[in-house]
Structures are given as structure tokens and as C-alpha cells.
Amino acid sequence: MAVYNPSNHRVHHAQNKVYVDKNYGGILILWDRLFGTYQEELEHEPCIYGVRKALNTFDPLAANLQHLKRMAKDAWYTKSWWDKLTLWFRRTGYRPADAEAAMPVPSTNLAHFQRYDPPIRRARRVYALAQHLCYSAATLALLWYYESLNFAYLISVVALLVFSLVINGRILDGHHWVKYLEPLRLALLVALLPLLNTQFVPLFMAYISVSALMWWWLAITDKEDKVAVVSD
Image 1 (cartoon, rainbow, N blue to C red):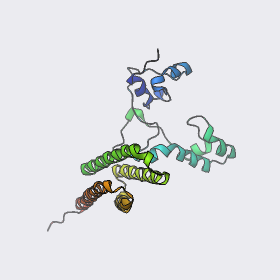
Image 2 (cartoon, rainbow, N blue to C red):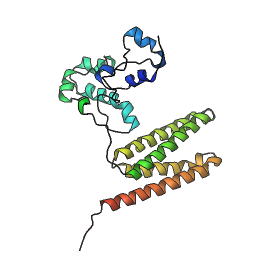
Image 3 (cartoon, helix red, strand yellow):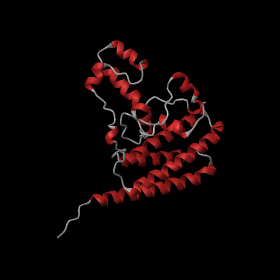
Image 4 (cartoon, rainbow, N blue to C red):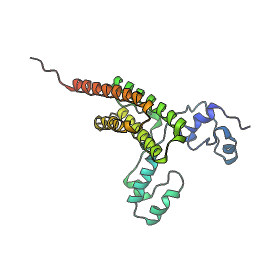
């Protein structure tokens, strides 16, 4: 019987070896049963969520392009022209032997699995969460109004949203470039104000002002944290 339940989907997102490449069908789990990719959740094998090759970033663009990036590096490195041309269409996980030997990518050690959780101040986490909620609201607004937007404007807004999500991910990573990229993002929003419908301008000005003040405060407090106390 092809009944969907949360257990099926938990298995799909687990990185345990027994669960990898299983339960693609979702609500149509019937297809997994037909083609041999169905796997029940096992009581003695709790699901460990994630991917077998550690990503170690909250950048959503890097997460989606990681496999293409690794394949491109393999295609560049391998000396086999056949592999250069065909590795894009091979089975999942295939790597040319010379590329794998030179650039090994170890799988996660599930016996000592540690969730990616870089040290970052709570204030920055709160800032990133607030920005993510704003981006979610902007995405919903875009889906609501997209029919009234011309193609160039729509692509520009999508590109800005992607750029913003990438920066937000790097804020959570603690990447040093964000101290320049976040002010750049806010400056781009200021430059776009004349293109907005006048009814949205006050809302965007308030958002930019609050974000800029919060980011300035974070930058100041970061510097204070790093200043050594000199005693007489």
C-alpha cells in the first residue's frame, strides 16, 4: 500500500548508508516500491540527517552548486578526455580515479557525527534570523505580484534575493567578507528605491534604516570584543 508518512521522508533525508538514495517518491512512494528504492525506517538505525560529504556552510547557493563544483574540478583535473566528457552523465558518486586519488573527499564519520555549528555571537544569529524572515516575506510578495512585473525587473529582484540569502548564510558562517557585503547589499537597496512603487518606499526605507543601525551596532560590538584590556 502506497501510504505517505513522515517516516518515509525522514529516511529520504538521512545520510546513514542504509538510507542513502532511498524513498524518492514522497507521497507517491509506490514508485520506490516498484523500482527497489524503498526503505523502511529501522529502529536500530536512527536517522542522521544531512549529506555524506560535509558541506560546512549555511550558504544556500553553495549547497545547491556543491556537486556541480566538485564535478567541474574533477573534469578539469582528470587526464582522461573520456571522463572529462562523460562524468556529467555517470552514476551518482562517480569520480575519475586520478581525480579521486589527488582530491579525496571523505564521507562524514557517522560514529562521531557533529552538526555544523560554527561559533557565532547570539546577536548575529538574531540578526540573520530577522533578515531571513524579511527575505521570506519578500519572496511571498514577489510570488503575489510577479504577474505585474516585467521580466527584467523580476530577474533583478530574484538575483537580489539570492545575493541576500548568500550573504545571510555567510553571516552565520562567520565569514570575514560579510563586513563589506552586507553594507553593499543595503546600498543596493537604497539605489533601487526610485524603482519601487511609491506605496512600498516608506516600508523599504524603514527596513534599510533598521538593518543598517543593527549592522553598525554589531560591527562596533565585534570590535569591542576583540580589543584586549590593558591594565596599569
